[in-house]
Length: 364
Image 1: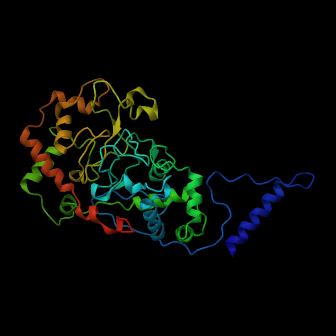
Image 2: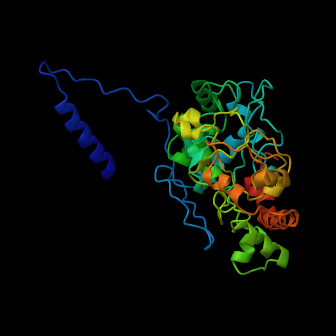
Image 3: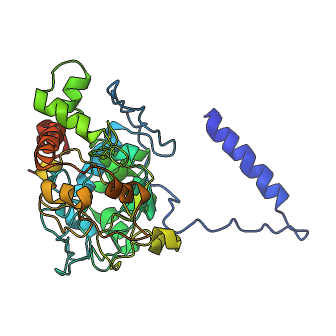
């Protein structure tokens, strides 16, 4: 009651300040598009969700405007798997982000509701709370921003946001679920993407052999230990862009010499900085053994092929990242060393993550 009285007092001050000389009152500004206005029901506060992060991980970044809750994650899980957010109700987020593929696609190029293929492979979603910039070119700032794009995208889900929100409002269950997650029954774009982002923040891979070794619960074999040494040495030189324990970059974009003439502009289309021409984000190597294509354009069908590209198989140019170009002046990995490196990379596979029922389709 005290909170409501305070709001009423502030509103009274605002009305007095905005009164015209003739006794009229200026109307309040219109709400931003997609914002919540009047609500039809109230719900108790959502239940905070706390996640224990292993000691060998950095602290989980907080999102003050979208804290994790049990109800928010449950709502996001339903939305992630529900094709209701696509124009013809056949496509969901999960259509291109499949759990047993580390939430990447099972196809070289993801296709939308009309079967039209995009030009890039859907990247994996593993430990995304730590990643920051989203998409291969980093054009989205965080998970909430990323989740705004696919629904109205004409190639992907092709449903204007206003139409999507109306569908959710008319749904038998969603108004009550939004109420439980956010405290009232208002459904908005902001709340849809927040719920999806909450669910995706629970995509945490903490139980690979690498993690068990870091926790002191297991040990590397001699071959795995040797592969780790190659990974973190100038010979393998993987660690600059895939540093432990995330094995992914959080803010670096690099041209890796995929083409002698850049075909996909990558980061350049976001920054318009010539130095970003053909530059892309390095995805995580966690669970890489469960993926069958690599790079934004799926050009490599195995880990070995991707490693051989970095091991001197790239097209050299002034655009190529200096750390990669420097490999031309050093001893490259020998065949047996590549085998040993792959043995180490296999320790990043987390079967528990790939089969976790809490991350699976709730309707199956």
